[in-house]
Image (cartoon, rainbow, N blue to C red; front, side, top):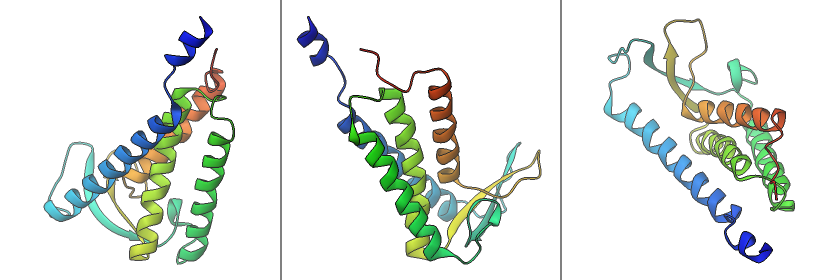
Length: 161
């Protein structure tokens, strides 16, 4: 019975890799499509505007022109998340791997832009509130963190065997 239960369990490593790959691909495709196919400033939606900003800093424009430091911190964060997840892969639930994939994919995409461009391309501006311009990577990072917090608070971040 235990062997049968074990065989039906979803393997978190390929699941995490597939989720991470899909999220990175979607993020890059969406960002490039928005910035290359829509004339920035010409698209006005009910709740958002598409506004192009080159952000050389981090959240809320902190650490402006500190690209090397931000890349270092980002790589360190990615490594720490991966080490924690895979140190004991049977410890964490599949939703935890999914939330972690969201978080890591957002960090990877922002870091890729920092390394290749020297800045992060932000382009989503909310009309209904005064808020800094952001991108899909920022959304994934925030959703990933929020999901992990909810999983921890509801005690669903670990596997229940």
